[in-house]
Length: 183
Image 1 (cartoon, rainbow, N blue to C red):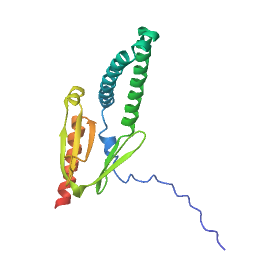
Image 2 (tube, rainbow, N blue to C red):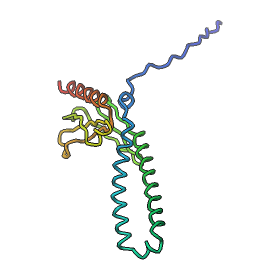
Image 3 (cartoon, rainbow, N blue to C red):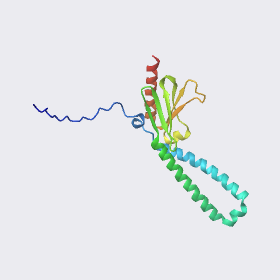
Image 4 (tube, rainbow, N blue to C red):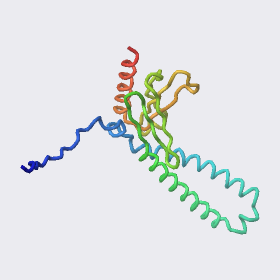
């Protein structure tokens, strides 16, 4: 009886099945973190101004007992802590932002504490728009808005904080997929 020949097969790395996701090919710009944090800080400052106004006029005795400099110091410390928390939140939001084009759907995932996912079938997409607001222009950012049939607000999903090249390329890729679906 002969022993079977033992051969060693070299394990080959599997070929990559698909391209890297869109978020790796066309990443969000880091300026997005600053833009979002700045918008949040402006909201905090307006809320802080209202809080100071209420504290000074509704509780003048308590503020004077605490001392104006102590009150201002506590207030500024709290405001600084809130701004640091806001910046951290925006950083983690930026890091978890995911978008890609599947075979049949556009996928957008975002969120820090709760992750939301939007999956839009290409057959439902009606329009793809690249747009900017005033702060986007200041930071050199571009946004893609996607609308579907029957959407009330005009758009259903968006990817914000892209470079101009990234936004235009993603728009071009989406429109190519849409043309292919409608033939």
